[in-house]
Image (cartoon, rainbow, N blue to C red; front, side, top):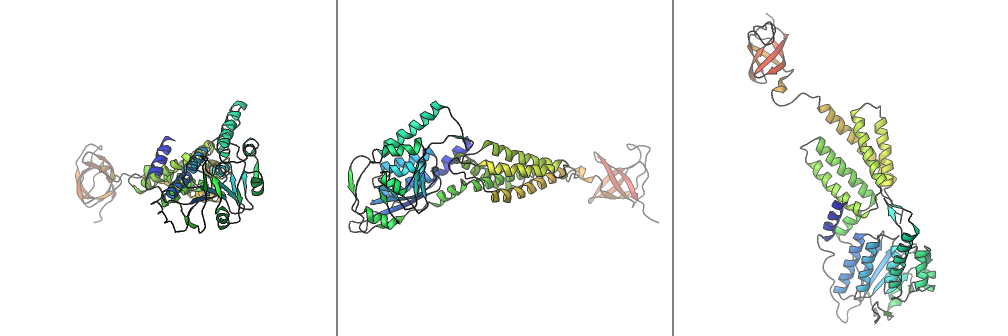
Length: 449
């Protein structure tokens, strides 16, 4: 995992964060509203994108940062990083749960309550923020003391944010202690959110002229008479990293990495498989740093590879190969499992990659085993079983090491040859063995006439 963390730190620190800062608008220009979006699990890549977007909004003098959100939750460290940037933002930050059917669950609930303005669209919900402990991607049971410690830490953090924002702290705590969730109507009636709006434009109309209290206790009046919405998307690098940490992509990268290195080790000198496999495996290590990896799933994938290799080496009438396919399918389905979403490697991707991987592994291993029986293609050993022509008669002898020697022509060269029987000029002979610079041969035909 250390390699994954190193690669993760390198990828997140490499390159420009999110492009050039937004330009500050003039006094008579429309109010600049910077739009960001959280769609999916909250992970380090998402946290970097939101942090960079808020920084750009502040550098450009934006009147408001509007974060639309639909998330099942995510990593605690990434959530706290986003909240820290929201609290420290010079521009007010509005978090808007939208569209209808969206949610701000778990870590999303914390982010919603930390905003200067918490808004929700009709048909959305929030809450269900009980912290989960997991090993290998699955929830685990802890003793009461540790459970209280975790809950107390989460509720204290929520209180420190919600109280400063004027939210209903007692009701908010039930989302942690009782895992309660709230519809948009329950949230606004319980003072967990400030506004319910049908659309982004309707929300900005409601916020125009509204006086808000910032996290430090100061008040500010939102002036959004003619809002100009500037949407900031993820950079190409962030989109790439966000794709890498998807379970399906991670599984494919893992298999491509293993297959590439396996091909290079069994067929040295091809170069390309080793390069592609090395890059894919390092990207898979990066994804392993972020995703909840199940050790049992990883071991099943390793077992499947071993069974594929054994299938090529031993005659099992397909039993080992079939066992490898089953093991890899089970491993793929168990490999990534988040207690937040239940998301993992899809069955279609598992099937579509397992069968070709099994076939390629077995074929490559059989080629390796078959190559061990091939005659050497370099040095004097390549002359074994070759056919040559006698150019100088071989006298024959009572033993392989005695008697007269002649010359034969083979591979465009004249070699000294010996045999246990006399062989006339022009006869064709087969080379039996090589002893130094002497070839021991046997006749395969004699010249007619």
